[in-house]
Image (cartoon, rainbow, N blue to C red; front, side, top):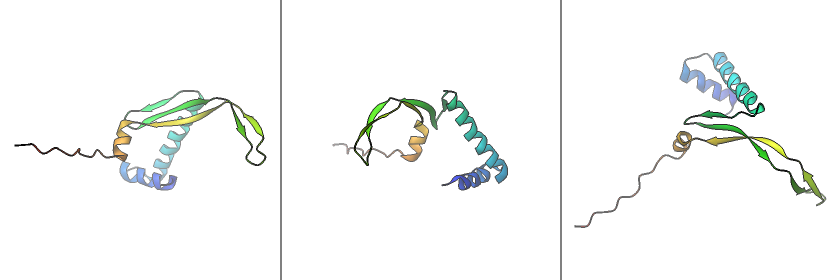
Length: 102
């Protein structure tokens, strides 16, 4: 699903126009970006948590020459799925029941 398909789905489910849905989605994306830029995390219970993780400096190799090079430390955006989202993606399967002995 791409952004325009997501906007159409939001519009259909919420009763908003496509323009209003696009504005809402853009506002959400902008707000998440600003919060992560400020070093905050955003927790949406049942959906997941957006956060910033620190990646340590490390030594890597140039794939063309094989020469070692230093890769500087950096910050990367991260998303950890919540229980509700995980359950939606992996529906609970009933465990097989054992037959009772008579």
